[in-house]
Amino acid sequence: MEVVHDRPWSRVLRISTAEEDLYLKAMRAGAGLRGGGRRGRRRAGMAPAAGRRHSAPRGRRAGHVRPRARALRRAPARRGRARRRAAGAGPARRAAAGRRGRVRAFFEHDHGVEPDEVARLRALAPRYRELCEELEAYGLPASIQHDDLHDGNVFVRDGRVAIFDWGDSSIGHPLWSWIKALGVARHRGLDTEILAAAYLAAWMTVAPEERLRAALRVAVPVGTFAYALQYRRQLDFMPAEARLAYEAYMPEQLRLLSARLASA
Image (cartoon, rainbow, N blue to C red; front, side):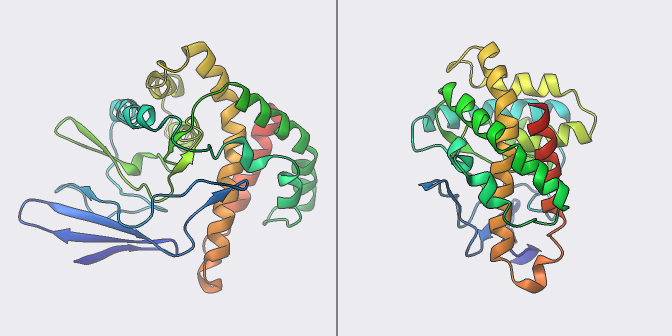
């Protein structure tokens, strides 16, 4: 057994067997999440992923094998089956995460951004609440929300797609898992429309594509704040000596949130 990844929020182990390498991920204490007074628990404990050709995971919480774009397009269909089974399984970690006063309360601290940026985000609080209500009005059922669906967490072998690292997952809004995938697609210059269509295809038994696309436009800014909330929680649970290395990510997310709210 070998430790291949040790972070303040988790540890990843590799176990070599005669047939293949197995990866196990253990979440540390404090990695759970509550949202808006309603509970959406992460899948904690050990999350297995197998693959002889997988080398040590890297990145913030991820494995490193990068699939082709078409593999990313196949991944949502696999997740869609789980989503449909989970529909209605529990309360969504959706708009409730940022309802009345939550934005203003969050920005009682600056979280590493400048005072004028904090003021801008506070001024956007009414718009955020409107978006929360609009998103909830679409009536999409709660599902498994991966929360870290980037290319380092999608593995492909022999035509099979496996999604790794469910340590951040919760019962939440079904469209929020798109947020991380959207960021990866833009960073790599991929066609986001093709990937969005693949992501939404798994949900077309619940709502028509036009309605899903409209909901997705609202889900991105709303979910960006929810992501910031859970990252703040992770920072708060980190030992002080470890926190410094990860704090810079928070201002990046808050500036992205400001831009998305302003354009929504």
